[in-house]
Amino acid sequence: MYRVFNNGKFTEGGRFYGGEYQSLNENKRSKILIDYKKTCEVDYSAFHARMLYHLAGINCEDDPYQMVKPEPELRPLIKKMMQMLINAKSLSKAIGAF
Figure 1 (cartoon, rainbow, N blue to C red):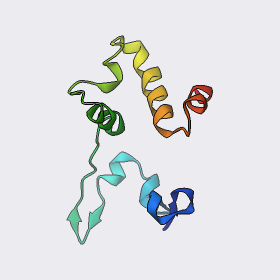
Figure 2 (tube, one colour):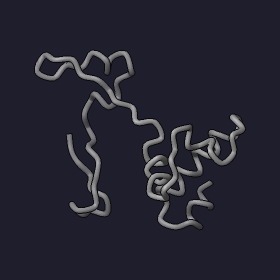
Figure 3 (cartoon, helix red, strand yellow):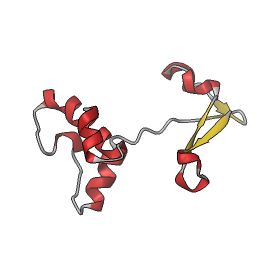
């Protein structure tokens, strides 16, 4: 297992890679034990989108990807665009990626 730091800096976060558990399917992950104790996998639904709404002072109790345009067929596009906006280095790069 190894860690890759964002921008090569310890202060900018990073992610662990190389653990074989990362490629396990949901059923096999549910059987992982630590010190012979069961584990659980927590899913934070739309975590980054909810943080942004919170920072803007907007209470987001519903699906954050459907607050602006509630048509269900647009949700995948809105989710993808929001993730691009969050992760891109600039607005123009996010729009270009989309």
